[in-house]
Length: 73
Image (cartoon, rainbow, N blue to C red; front, side):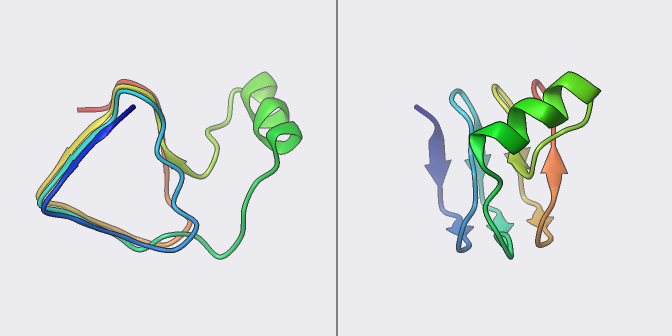
């Protein structure tokens, strides 16, 4: 469950639950990360491709393959 208002979401974009995206452009990603890849990244302390949980993005342009973590405002 996330909220997207007046925004363009690109191909293969991953948006986690609780995210809010307003007046923004997300360019998407060149590839998907598997669940196993995402778990491995989390174990290493890295951020997977996409928008993290409870993140708020307003009036932004997000480039391809961007990694934005949880609870970013």
